[in-house]
Amino acid sequence: MCSNYNTINNDGNVPIKAWTQGVPFEIEAQQQLNNIASLPLIHSHIAVMPDVHMGKGATIGSVIPSVDAVIPAAVGVDIGCGMVATKTSLTANQLPDNLASIRHAFEAAVPHGRTGGKRGKRDRGAWHNIPDIVASEWQKLVLRFEKICAKHPAIKKSNHVNHLGTMGTGNHFLELCLDENNAVWIMLHSGSRGVGNRIGTYFIELAKQEMQRHQIHLPDMDLAYLKEGSDYFDDYVEAVEWAQDFAAKNREIMMFNAIKALRSQISTPFTTAEMAVNCHHNYISREHHFGKDCYVTRKGAVRAQKGEMGIIPGSMGARSFIVRGLGNPDSFNSCSHGAGRIMSRTKAKKVFNVKDQIAATEGVECRKDEAVIDEIPHAYKDIEKVMAAQQDLVEVVHTLKQIVCVKG
Image 1 (spheres, helix red, strand yellow):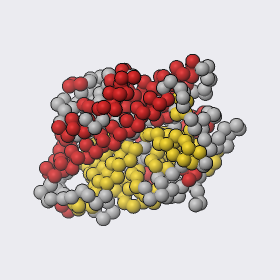
Image 2: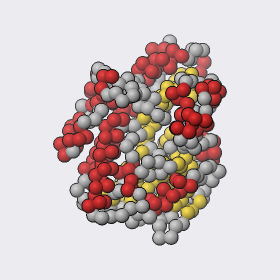
Image 3: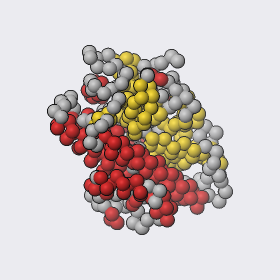
Image 4: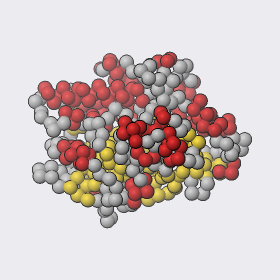
């Protein structure tokens, strides 16, 4: 397979293979990747996706293979964050002319956002009364959770069941989309919510303590790692795999409730069985690459094994893509997880205003107020260029354009 990457070689470090032709690749992200590449646990090379940008702990849009160790901050605190998309049997002409009722139904069906500084019943982004479907699905997760908490009680002091089936904030979203044939899709983006954040934060701190205890000096303490056989390695992997299962279940419940909400607004009966994709893009996976078993950390990247389906969303005013993996070994069978930011949230709010947001989301039924300016499409890379840079990683199966968008 002909690969479309640039190789960055650093003295004494593993190479960095970057699928960044034609897209911005900030110097700060390159330095962060150089720091990761200097670690002794990295296997073969680091793969960089075209949506790359600097992140907390590790670079977003990076694929990091490690042997006998994992870096908790490389996974981050939104463990198992990812996407789900479902194609319906509806077509555009079966939708109402005014889509506001569908947006409001979505907003009522899926808790989203967060009441600043509030938890529990005062937080609009959490369940106040646990619905039956959430209680039922939680029972499939709770025994493993209790086992983890028995060893690490601090993890229990988190939002868990009351966040199952909720969206969260920031770039998390729920959308109604049309594909190239005007078929209607539902697509959403979320992860492991409060409990994943607690697990990530907790083990990142433990990893830092391990580095200090063993006097291991790092270019960045956020790259603190846990080695196999160490006190917390097995516990972390167990907790991460549980959080990833929580995240996938979280998306399933939200999709179930979103479909139910759409049915309440559409007189035409419809089905949803034709195609559904549910994929992580912040997670750890045990895989075999270049002759070794390793832990692959995808930080803002989707697994794209040959034939495997994935989702690459654009911003709230741009196109999104249902893709099929081409199984490129140099990328560790991976692709980008979206467009990737080119501007911080703070800067976006300073540079753009509500008028800009209205213009950028023309034709989309969504909020168009100051609170979502940080998600304006201009704060993201051009998704068309991002897709062009990874033509050897995935092939496009469906192209989606949102017509309703609910932001966290």
